[in-house]
Image 1 (cartoon, rainbow, N blue to C red):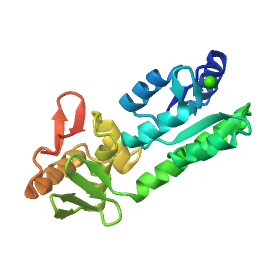
Image 2 (cartoon, protein in one colour):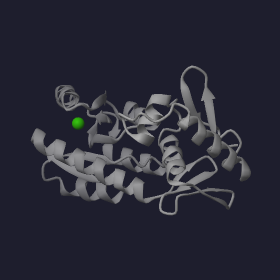
Image 3 (tube, helix red, strand yellow):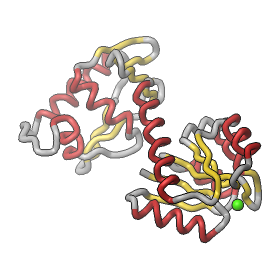
Amino acid sequence: MRILIVEDEQSLATAVADLLSQQGYEADVSTTYFEGMEAALSNAYDCLLVDVMLPDGDGIEMVDELRKAKCSTPVLVLTARNATSDRVRGLNVGADDYLGKPFEWSELLARIKALVRRSTMRQEADEMVVGRAKLHRNSRTLEVDNRMLELSSKEFMLLEYFFRHPKQVLTREQLVSHLWGPDTDVADNALDTYIYFLRKKCGRIGLKQIIKTIRGQGYMLGPMV
Ligand code: CA
């Protein structure tokens, strides 16, 4: 879980980052609007904490810009206490929640957890899209250029895992443990069999190389061409 803190008050930013690290989160700090924008758009965060008054811009405008740039990461806006207008503005442009300063650590953590949980649930309800391929959770089908492919439950689990991590190499151990649980004694070639069938099936609807073998490392989602 990785969180970005956009806050120019250095001591507060550091204290929040320390608190989040202690809780097992990875925390990055940006102290300006410009840095914050750049960080939020170039990394995959699970949540953004954005202060309203930044030295080079307005945090609520940042949320507006991020939403326009199709960044849907949950945002918790940090406002001065009782600044009702900030809250309304923030929620109007697509912030997910706000917290008045000064705040209690426990409240901050609770809000972050709630935001991340809600956003995960939202993601689970929807279809997942990578390139021109769409994975439908409810019907367990893969859609490419209006052609549909039904997947078995294991094939779906496997492909969904790749869709969740489209730019990462997944090791054999990770995949086996995802499909059969951490202490499995499933045969070593069971994974290869599923990958073989998945590639073959996807080839039928025009997706070549849906899963790439990365020699000595594992497998990775292909470029969807
Ligand atoms: Ca500030």
